[in-house]
Length: 243
Ligand SMILES: NC(=O)c1ccc[n+]([C@@H]2O[C@H](COP(=O)([O-])OP(=O)(O)OC[C@H]3O[C@@H](n4cnc5c(N)ncnc54)[C@H](O)[C@@H]3O)[C@@H](O)[C@H]2O)c1
Image 1 (spheres, helix red, strand yellow):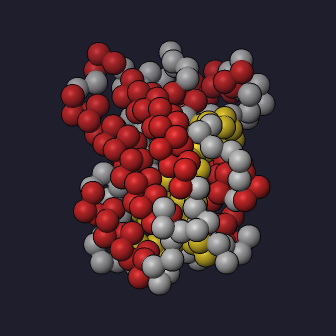
Image 2 (tube, rainbow, N blue to C red):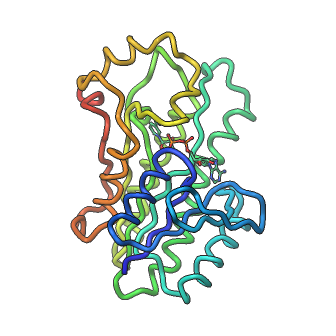
Image 3 (tube, rainbow, N blue to C red):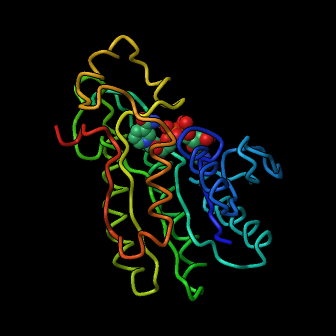
């Protein structure tokens, strides 16, 4: 049975990915913000351990618990969905705003990927790490300017390519998914509900994506069907990045 760790598993894309993996017969452990020491079901049936992805010690602890749960067998795949969005124009972005977003989306991606790779390196079958970028890495957005978020996702894409090159010789693939506008709690709180029609106008598919549609691509990258796919970013955006 294949083993998957999903971060941000209690909401949105992470939750949908955990649910899809379980449906496909994978063993799944979720990691998300929770009180220390807690072990909770996340609604999908996956066990969830507490983890703050910005904190090295918390990531180490969480992966130690994963090791215990799986008898030190490495995860076959990690899908890193934990992330935050902040809608703030560049001139209003204080240093602390920048750091807060970069800490979760940038540093969190490195810490989680590195903890995964440490384990996968010792596994004969290697593994797959999928990070979460965004359409914001490739396109500015006049409607919802969010400088720190866009820059943090640019960092995720650069990190993805670097890790694919560093870890390829160990049989570890690293890819990113770049969702467009997806109907999750993150989007609901993005602060610009009046602009909904304008958002739809910019999406060739004329609708938001669903968390399940992104999860399908995450699970493709996690699977052996993507055995020769590494260092790439797959857009899941209804054609928005092509327009
Ligand atoms: N929803 C979209 O339209 C959209 C578009 C592009 C990219 N993304 C990216 O997809 C990923 C998932 O987004 P979503 O829409 O599912 O969001 P969401 O808000 O529904 O879920 C995010 C999850 O991350 C967790 N999280 C936040 N900070 C954390 C931390 N420090 N440590 C551990 N967990 C933490 C939250 O608790 C939550 O469970 C994010 O990286 C986001 O940037 C989303």
